[in-house]
Length: 167
Figure 1 (cartoon, rainbow, N blue to C red):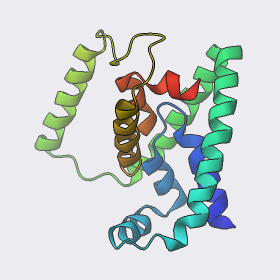
Figure 2: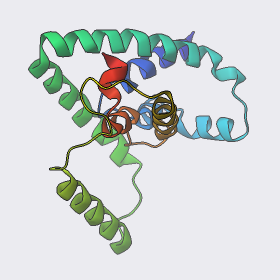
Figure 3: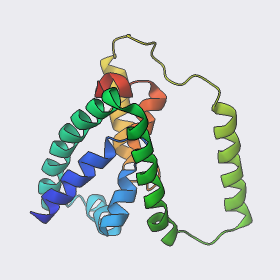
Figure 4: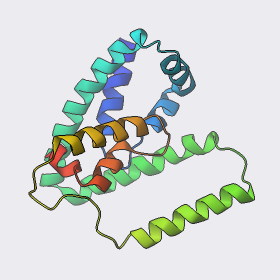
């Protein structure tokens, strides 16, 4: 039952833009154990979590779509609060700062700054989602779920298919 509730929480959270599944795994204290089990293909104990995650994705996606369409500003403020609340947990597990890591961080900041003004996505508004693009987006966002700080939903936003999937 505990794994099912963890999955429900995970599914609810990974639907939200900016929320990382890997960060949720760290907060729940199961990140390293989960990686070891997945690497060893021991997934049977995680079936309840997968079922809870599927239910959480459905419930979270439905609720989030309703909240965004009815009260966008408060919903975005709530998401920002959730993102800021998760920073402490992620920073507790950070490696030591080195000049190389600083250069990578600076490069990422500069790339984000220069790309910020560019339109994102590969689809135009109202365009149908191609099944191949949907499959690629799903695979990439699922893989990103295991990386703390990389939200799978953000990958869908970058690919321009988040709105089509959610709404």
